[in-house]
Image (cartoon, rainbow over all chains, first blue to last red):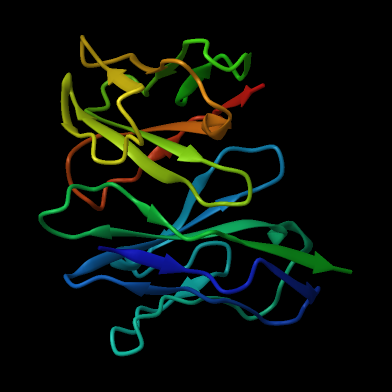
Length: 111
Length: 115
């Protein structure tokens, strides 16, 4: 079975401060990891995924297989980063490409 | 271009009623997914279609839930004899191909409230 854990329901930071949204997973095989974001009154959308190794809107995430983590980081938070963030996992092989989501972290960037 | 659309956006049903939720995926997208999102939770997988074939329905919570995609485009999620625990946002997503790395594009969701 696969599981994604996001320990923080709410994270509040000041503008310009670093941000780290935590994500841990459990899966016996090789997973692909994603971060999805939902801005206020908008639909869920992909922010970034591990396989692309890209930085989107200043966010990065590194897969640490030893710690089974995929934390999302940004060095300087902006007001427009306030949103709900979901970490998600999909098996790379044999499991289809359905997503298993964490419970989400609400990021609030204060001025 | 148009994204994934869902209708209705809001549905209120009395306990015991049947409901049908519609999803229009992005044109040409092969894969279609349904997820259920309860209040305060992340989306949970319900079922997956590849064209018209339902390849995975392991997430459907009971035999009251039924999904179809008869022509490989529009999909309908039907819930029979609704219960209060069915109250949730139902999300549809589509992706262009079959690889796990293909982006799933989500619709706005249908918020179902069962009284």
